[in-house]
Image (cartoon, rainbow, N blue to C red; front, side, top):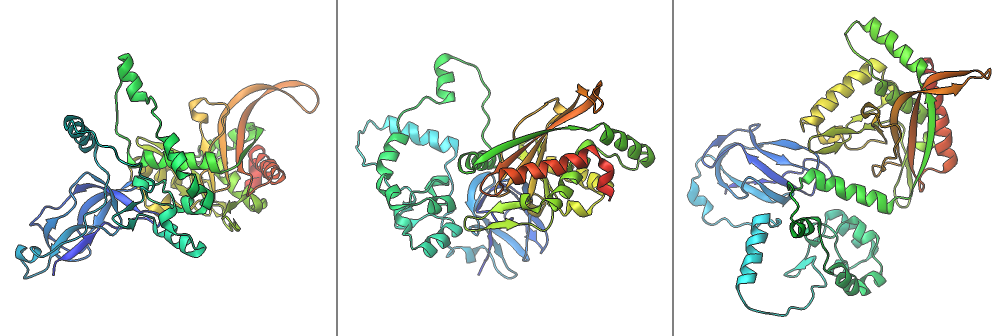
Length: 429
């Protein structure tokens, strides 16, 4: 019997992926450990290694196919002594994938050319096909625990797939109002492309990548379901800049500490001093983390990603600096492992290097807080003795999930953070 090569789960949260490229062809011999394909997940493109030896007998999913569910057969491997005739009796369920743009256009064109007018009843349950309900494993488990029949749950995921949020938000009234909701949601609207075409506007159109789709979905979910509130502080970072210069001068090129490295370290220690801010909402409980795993926003050609400095409170500035440079470089190359960007406890987004003085960031679920850092700017200040002087002032805005962190806790956290940023020598104590 041929061995099925399955679409692997490259991270704990992966449900489907894009088969970017086959690196082996039909008829080629592979050994255990050989890289046979590249898979695009929601955050990176990763290599897939063979776990068995044999010959690629048949490729079931071609390069470029999107939204291939995890554990779907993507190829068949012939063992020693087998030939292609053993594949004649093989049959596997066709992977559930989305139509490509060209397929959608062909389908639309065929429908227009048919000149057949048929009336179809509105589809009230797009998650079911042929008696099968499409739902994520987590959604099925939650539905089973709650005694909810998935047949009457409206899915919001790809191709109507039922996801965790659909089950958690489900009520009988939700099912009763499904038809009216669908009717209003399907009302004609003028999209950006249609409007641009009507007005003769020139534009460049790019297909949305899996990474960009994930970013859009997560940020929309965060902004619409997480009750944000915001707290802003101003910090005098003149001492920090002075200490940074001294450290870099002594390093003599061996390493170079950035302002952001100080910010990572200060946040990590502040979270240990105010542990109630190092938390996540978990529906019926709140998780308080022992370590400060700091997610740092990095811009890449395909979108934003947040590599993590784990247990940052235990690391020195030089170690944080070198680790951050390595993570950021591999993030831009799409070479991070899932465990290197999943599971942080607190996020930092710094736009100071772009001259942005102040902004508010969207929380990165399931984390409870994110700190938005602006540029350090020379500003006039009134000194303690009443004299007027100047100082380098940096603004930082904390976005907070009010379900997890109250205003007083957020304010206490920023007070401690400000102390470390304005007195960087305290980080060494």
